[in-house]
Image (cartoon, rainbow, N blue to C red; front, side, top):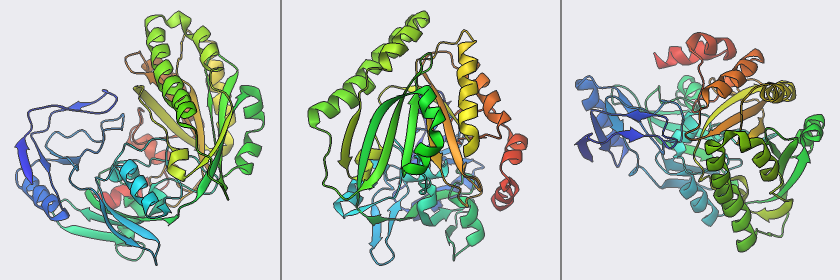
Length: 418
């Protein structure tokens, strides 16, 4: 294990957070993590693990010891009887997805990017969209955790269940996760149907679109009446993946290259954004394809941005979105990034954004380097009025008292943490 005095600053992906830890370590095993934690405790240093830095908040910012998990990677074991896979906590989701696919296995659901580490993604409640299948954290069946005194704790529904109840979305506050066991299933195919739709139609038919599809999401382009919808459903096949050229045009040229140029222009000339939005919202055409799950759920995100996302009771999603639209229309704000809407079933994790209630997510983004506070503050007022819960890895201004109001099990979490 290499231990170095930290001379370089740590920065997150969006560039919103910088930290200067006293020292950093790169452990290669749970035993080395435990040793590093014990030494940090002796020296009075607080400990943080930073994954890929995809959180926009300061949740991974370390002022004492920074643990870098680059060497804590790979699959420990696959249990085909229990249908589980145990992985080291620093394994990037993209490597896990590819390794599982080679083994003929898959996670049930996942978010739309896969750069994060498995521990970072699950600790912050990262999710995709699903009518019946929940977040990545909900697929955890067991955790290995190094606690503050350097001891190793194994937790599941059978072993240390009171810790397991809160640790699957643990915010890095309960210890350093060193391994995660996920439930997996045989590799399957998803049929993706992407289609432009008007804002009025999507919002009018939202309940039906949600009910009729295993995975439904949509993006609304501010300053327009245009949305892009995506419906993912299991398919018996055959596989019909995107062609290399057409996939590159849509995912790289339009969704990343052109989008980067559009946002750069919008940052330089904000008054042009509504006109640009009208063109951009019509650039993506309908398409249908069938592929293995991670190639359908996830896509590259090369345009850097800042983001805020709130989970609302599902029935509040459309009223809240209409309020966001009305707020933008009567304000001088110029928004170049689409607003994303997804769903999740209720789950049983104390600090999950979908804890105990069927949820819908409304996410707002701004291109990195453009002023975002006025927009995010206005949206946050709407979300909190609907009982919204902020995503743990995305920007928000909630404090412990306000979080305790919207998370009935907040006290359960802090009691276990203490």
